[in-house]
Image (cartoon, rainbow, N blue to C red; front, side, top):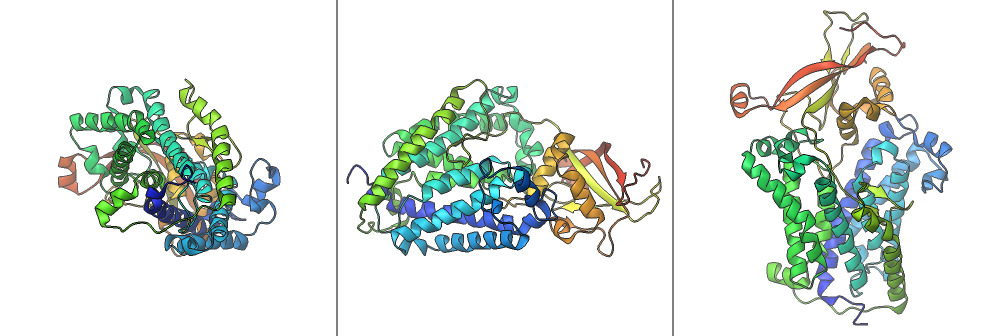
Length: 480
């Protein structure tokens, strides 16, 4: 079946599947480490409460049939183990039906988590992982020929990811059109990284070059993915390099890494033989039943692509939207608008039973989001700190905090261990605080002169009260 096979992509498929397995592994570890406080039976947004009011048809998940914290943990562990096996290549050597079953289980388990994850899982990279994970089920094993139709489907995902992000920018904030968005973005992005301070202080003309380069990569280069080699490979290579630039300038979970993973599927084996001296790919076969299944999946993707494609050309382009319950074909995009000022919610507690003007408040430190002005931003991506990200949204508008913030504060007052594990530092190791409050601060990066003088990375000033002091007794202290 010469029309079906893409024999010059055997190594490309291998690298793509190994890299995708690594992302799956991170995703399942994130779920395992964070779910108790966020989604557990006693969490801020409990899964049992969610599945009781939302039917299976609206949010397909195995947790509609059964839920317990132990069962969720077991689900995440199974996903992590299968991801690790795929990462080391064990599944590639298995019979084709077994290989497909492993990828299907990974997709089903993560689908089940995302669909009950509520606000904590309302990110575009969740749908991206599910869409790509679905296609991976049908990519075959080491003994089968890479299916050309599904390799094209992966390019279609990468095209929508990049082109959609480019359109949402050029249609959105004026700073993308006048090339000034990066004067602010490195400082105000959800979770700066260890090099974000340096990126922020690049000369303004270089920021304009960055934005212009971004527009070229997202609005022009994606069309090259559908041209013959080596043009398609060059286009993918440009995208990979651009995504690596984004990786070192901030923390965007596995969004950038998924774009890189997709780019790997476009690079032909000839490139890898030139780069690493790989030998020729082994002989492959194409079972008829599998070829029929692949064609059916390709047709399904084509049919489901109508709504996302229509969205791309719409003036009211939706960002990070799913058009089907299983996240099979989605639309993507990020940062259609860029905030000019960085706001941070700082949470503090005290053991004082009667807070007043002289009360000493101690600050809770988060793992990723800015807090202590002396602490350099850290690198966490592709690991996703869900609470830290939602705290960034809460600082933009209190409405983002409504479903979960009260529960978060209550768990701090109770000294909940699962919640405290999500934080970098608990200032009350011996006993929980009597009162907790939250204040809104304005943050900005220090200038070079300020950094040399103080050693600080940030300058912050208090702006207002986000939450007045509260206690478990339900009382609210006067402002202090």
